[in-house]
Length: 446
Image (cartoon, rainbow, N blue to C red; front, side, top):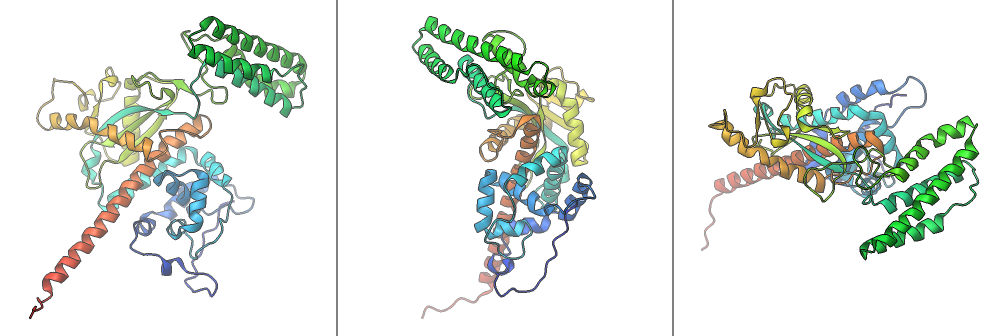
């Protein structure tokens, strides 16, 4: 059922402190809370609720928590803990009085992320609207953009053969215990020892011994797969429950290190891909597309669009869709787009407005200066990864990849807005102090 809107009493309480009496009402988070259109967000999310059941959690509370998490780069547990002792966090989420305990469960954030899904782009659009209203972003800054892709690493370890085989053995044992299937032998201790020794032999460059340990792991994994298939044969419920894990385990057992084609890099996260972008630090994850304004706005560079690109598509084949989605999100037609050489052979509708790094034909004057600014998107991607959560995605599945990319972009935009509001207030205060001091008469020292 749709949550009820909290009503402000506007009165004092003998046993509780009003937030507007204990915080600085000129603080940037307080100003941000007044600029976000909470009613519009609530109206857009309303179709996700049914007409029956008990009222849900207030929209402003959960959306505010998601914003605070990605603005300050906190975990779900971290933002809930900080909410308890930070009155500014409580004010942003719509509280009237200071609360001494967190009123909901931490898992509510996970449920809301799954419920919102693609609706999270509304928060990205709202961040751009707030930036425009605050003067940090101008309409003319939306007409010329820079587009680039990056890798969003997933929360997995380096996928060696021994680790994958060991993870498959542990995963099948865990699933068998869950469904009450008694295996002939679990091979957990043997697999743990073999995986450990395989790593040691590989480090010592004793590759024959290393391969022997891999054969032990493969043979034991094959025995577990055959044992489970014999014991679930004819039991439709168990066959459905084990179909996907058994197919993953069979893939891990049969795949080779240097084979071509699709490979499985994680037993618990099969959506992980190996993306070769010339950066060996973290190639395992999902590709993400980022769009920023080319010319620096008064508040800096904002993320105009962010999107996860599963299945590792070629960059040039995604440009047309990315430009269309950016125009839909911002409501402004894009005059020029600047990209790197990975977008050669792109499919944009109007190829004349797309300029590729290193291009000579048609590049002169303003276009040449703007093309040199294409590389300014790289530090923005760095901020998304270090200050936000783009550097490591802990959310589950393809939906988790999509949600993490969008919320990281939203967090970056609101960080720029908070910095703009902070600097703007300091500038106004400094101007007022300077003007007041100029009007004061000088006191005689005698």
